[in-house]
Length: 218
Image (cartoon, rainbow, N blue to C red):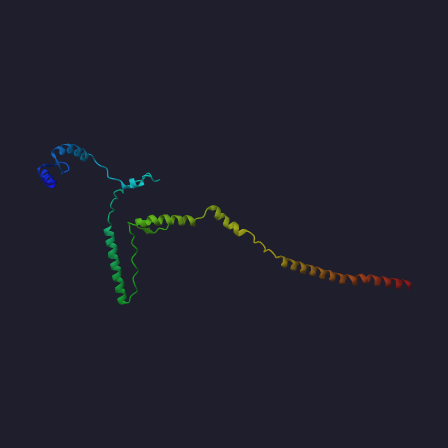
């Protein structure tokens, strides 16, 4: 009898029984060994496989902080009534504008701006933003306001700087020598003038002295 026929006959003669836990089929003797093991495996709670932890093994990054789960955000109350009133006021003002344009009358003033209560007001510039934009803007506006404000020491230093006397511009050597030459020339000219005046005055007493002697002889 061929081998294939023997294997088929043996396979057909074997009776396979299903496992009550996993549903697979085994022979009776194998099923008796399998069922307690299968029950033990399926009774344990298996932890989900963490592929990130396995990838980080052997690296410098040993621990990974878990991101905190977002808390259940409280749903804000809808201000549908105020939105409806703002919408109706805008329509009414638009109708008045079109009517005034048709009749040739001056245009009515625009409606007052509505304040959205959902927006957050910036404490530095008093503008309003939504929650996402306010978180970015308030930090930026705070830095700008601190840069604009000055400390008392800098405020006191400003008038002191204004009271400082202006320094005279420094003269170059060429200009300085030119000025010294002009001063020397002016001094020499003054000395010459003084000498010309002194010489005739010094000669007057001599003439008077000669005249006195001549008169004495006579």
